[in-house]
Length: 326
Image (tube, rainbow, N blue to C red; front, side):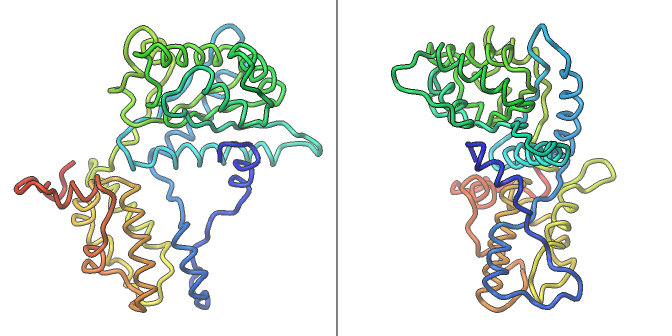
């Protein structure tokens, strides 16, 4: 995904499609592959991010003097930050492709991962790698930066998505240089920048003078765990309903998963990634054991990620969270 060719293939590949009413059962292997990929549900975070990205891209289109306004997607692990980032990138890429004239080889979107222990040079190298800009170990950071800025501008990159921004640590000398490099890039490349990372507001990214510069330019989108209830709505139950409607199981009882919403919220801590994994894995198990339906017994037999398991089955006695909390 971190090269243009890979991202373009991702954007152009049609997402998995749920079975249609009355459709003949699909082959077993096809259904297993479908649940392995599964659908992406338009969560509130995705909707908010898509709307704000569209607005900020228009807002910054003719801005020439300083860096354009940016966005930061933050939240705990497994709450859908990367999914939201990629879906917005895909939408932007496809919108550009539909409008592009024949022979247009511009690049609308760049997607870059901040490497662990990022330095200015390694971060610049990741930006270069995305567009296949040739660099050598002998090149200085300034030389790579010049090549990156020139190529990104010439390629017409309008949206830059930077994931794992929490890996950037401005408290270290190398991390400070990387943060300064990124700030310099936002002022030299005429694009809208969107960052995503784990609990960014409590990380080193937002601390000190450099953190204040980032916070002063970026709007925040909180991609936290979904609450069981928000006013008159039940967003977590709505998400469960959408996921259940996408299942391709021959004997599953519609409505049975939404009725388990309190249990599923406790089981996953309201984290979208944990919920999606649990339902996908349960669907695959149901196909393999020929039951073709998801039950609470089946769900409870599946081991989830450590965060979810510690929330639901803590190793220290007496620490279990109550249903509907968090």
